[in-house]
Length: 96
Image (cartoon, rainbow, N blue to C red; front, side, top):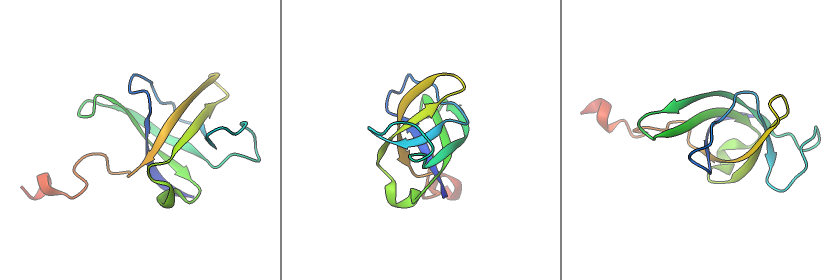
């Protein structure tokens, strides 16, 4: 498992830490569990929730839509696997 970024496909959706990453269209369960959401926060720059997750073969899957299943809160939603650097990945603003 590697760290990747995640963002909700529905920008109004709040992400939750601890949700399990399941392939889209699969039934949640131990056999289909491919990782979990480690942290989330609201990004004022992006104007939506963003998060980090540990996901199997995560770097190979950037751009893939997967399902986040949160059994504790009874929530299910789709997220896109993305680069874990959400803002200025090339460092242009930092180097000015």
